[in-house]
Image 1 (cartoon, rainbow, N blue to C red):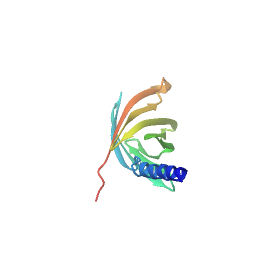
Image 2 (tube, rainbow, N blue to C red; image 1 turned 90 degrees about the vertical axis):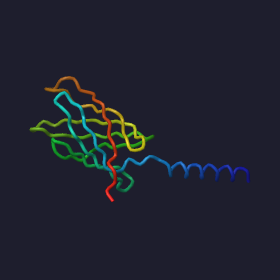
Image 3 (cartoon, rainbow, N blue to C red; image 1 turned 90 degrees about the horizontal axis):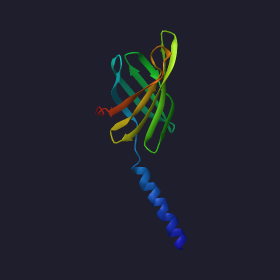
Image 4 (cartoon, rainbow, N blue to C red; image 1 turned 135 degrees about the vertical axis):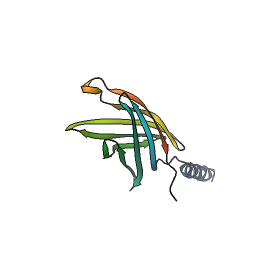
Length: 129
């Protein structure tokens, strides 16, 4: 009987914890401060069939994010860009805290040089209602 109570207590605690799990879905906005000036960016994250998907948009166009993961409140994803026939990958990694994500992005350096690591600070846009 004691074992059953312990098991039920554990299950109740696990269920309660999942109710308070961070939710990364929504519209996120930020400006990346690059050597060539600020780049305003929007990311729309949604959950489909238990997986995160997203649409990424900035002055260079729209893209679907790939290699998305969300574990222990850490969001990571990649954006494949094609600028003038040259493809490159930008990697994002950040910690979700309420309506903010703070982390970094890694992008190829100019003219194929060393990669650049820049701060990434996103805010969730207010839901339109």
